[in-house]
Length: 332
Image 1 (cartoon, one colour):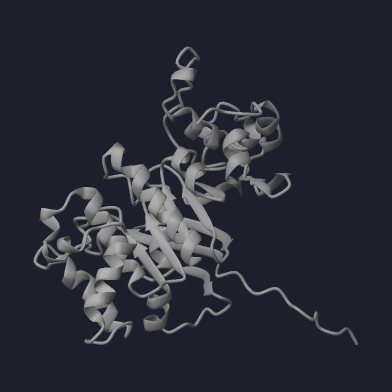
Image 2 (cartoon, rainbow, N blue to C red):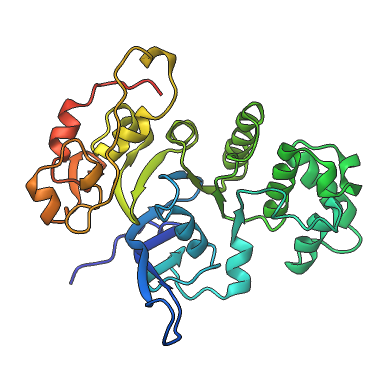
């Protein structure tokens, strides 16, 4: 009889297993449009560990925000399972105290009729993180946590800058002391001068509090800056994954290479610009119609995941070729 290991490793904080989401489009009336199904997310699997930042990268419409909303339990998956610390049946109230979400639009996520104080007070009371007696100090501490002055507590969202509003949204998320924060494009609507400050705040909170982050973005440069690992998503699938530095420095999927090439860099100004062809493949690899490396097999057979290096995976028939022809370092 084999004995159990003395110190079994703990389960990951978040485990996403074969998750898919299908939406129906079109009406149900006899003379209306034909009802069609759209697979926004297809068989996505990954793990996220405590205190880790995982970046999910892709262009608009690739399914990354739908994935984020499923993890935050704002949308239910059609198939697959999402487990928190090994459990997939965590009650909603407990789950939402452990998993919080920061949205893309800091103004749209805050009620314009209420003050900052109200936005921070509400989660503290709902999740019993403060009593009426210690409420003022806890609300003030949240403002200190995100680098905002306490006099801003009595202002309304429209009286704040975009960066201040996003910091309030982050403070609200941390009011319930979450284990995981899903940040969906948290800096894309901010001025460039404010973005690094918000990203630095997220990294500081991860380091000091041990909070894990799922960082959703279309910007692969910021994904490398913030994430320990990167998942690249295209047409609802994860097409490449691995440690952030190696993925960006030496991509193993042509789509990742395209994302890197779209990042402005004066050092590449003299290089020829790669232009992806328009269209999408109906069969085979979803990226085949835009891929400069596509061959006949790519247009007829959907690729599986291929390991190209330790901890590096790519969903591409020509992953080895892309990896071999990628330079050792790509400036991003």
